[in-house]
Amino acid sequence: MKSSNRDDGWLTGRLYFNREDKRVIIKRPQSGFGYTMNLGNKWTWIFNIIFVIIIVILVSVL
Image (cartoon, rainbow, N blue to C red; front, side, top):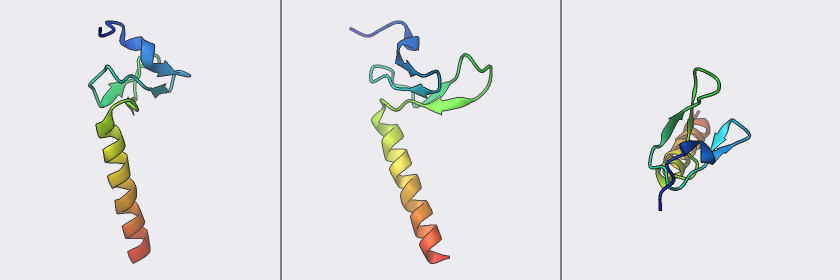
C-alpha cells in the first residue's frame, strides 16, 4: 500500500529517500526554494552515475 504522506521520506530535512514516490526531483518544503533528488528512485542513481562518468572523462581529457 502506498503512503499518501510524502513527508515520510525526508532524512535530516535535506535528503529525500522514498521508494514508493516515483518523482525524481523533489521540491524542499521547509526552505521555500530549492530542490533535491529522490534517492529512493533508481533513475536518480542512473543519472548520478552517468553524470560522474562524464565528469571523470572531462577531467581526464583536460
